[in-house]
Image (cartoon, rainbow, N blue to C red):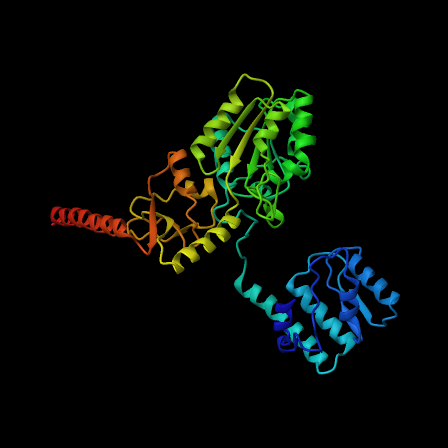
Amino acid sequence: MLRALERLGLADLYGASRIPIYVLNVAFPLVPEEVRAFCAGKRAVLVVEEGSPDYVEQAINVELRRSDITTRVLGKGALPRAGEYTSDVLLNGLASFLAETRPAGVDADAVAARAKGLLAHKAAAMAAVGDIPARPPNFCTGCPERPVFSAIKLMQRELGPTHISADIGCHSFATFAPFSLGNSILGYGMSLASAAAVGPNMARRPIAVMGDGGFWHNGLVTGVASNLFNKGDGVLIVMKNGYASATGQQYLPSSTANRLGAATGMSIEQTLRSLGVKWLRTVRSYSVAKMTKTLKAAMRTAERGLKVIIADGECQLARQRRVRAEEAEKLKRGERVAKVRFGVDDAICTGDHSCIRLSGCPSLTVKPNPDPLRSDPVATVIESCVGCGLCGEVAHAAVLCPSFYRAEVIRNPNWWDRARHRARQKIIGAFTARDAEARA
């Protein structure tokens, strides 16, 4: 909304009495006192509410009429009843609202003309640029769920394809390239239940993927308990990242701590064993080789029944927020801080790009080959890398080229760091001098 006001040239009016903005932290229930206080004395208000029916708009109307406040409430009409409220939609909606209400100090006709010009310019710019490559939804940089899907691809390369029951959550992004894994999505925590429906018709065991949020929400009963009761035979992967990440990183029964900082005392492993799950493995998410091996074991074992693999890896967004704060405090105290970074050796990279097809990390991309005798672009790791190590893990697990290297960026180095740096410089200098003499 603020961005739309800026584009219409109204940013200087934000916060003034002419165009104040009331942001609902919670849409239901409304806070009647706040709604009345905001709307009192105004000729009209615009309710920006995606979707239909217009629940918030109706509730505000009821509250104002109940209090004999005559403020007009506009919403649907100025804004569409369906579709996403993109910046273009908001520009048109704000222009329509201002044209309808004519607030003092605002030239509504000029605003409408500006909105029309902005939208026309966008169309012209799109026509001038031409087709832009598609940018499908994807996992965050360093997401602990991406290496699990890399492992599934490596497993299927050897054992063949199998039915993948996806679930609601971050892991739904695996249905897009480069993984393209997910034959069905039924509902939040319903992946194991949907796998049970197709399992008897499959030549191989189906694999159900479920987040820890979906596990506690629904998967424990409709999935695990039902599967055990009905003697099902399949594989369940639980993404244990510590939070309901897709909806804002809310705490779960299996989180390290609750929102007050106290330990929860609950775990997915203990819960599964208490229900009778016998085949249970917990694997670090980023260990692609071990995860691939565990998946193969689950698919090949003669043991019937539910087989559960818990992929243990903290949500990278939550981890980065936590780590940044911790590192900032260390730097203030002058303490040592080391950040891991990965890179690609241009001279070794073959330009095959299997690493990109198997990981899909946004920090892993391509650049022109510095070797004039080779035309294929080489892989490169850009600055957004968070040092999760997936690119190197994939290169190892998939037996790809050994072009990845690991480096540490150290701030406030100690005496040992400085000593190692001097030793490395001497060794590298000796080899460089030897190579130069050999070439001469």
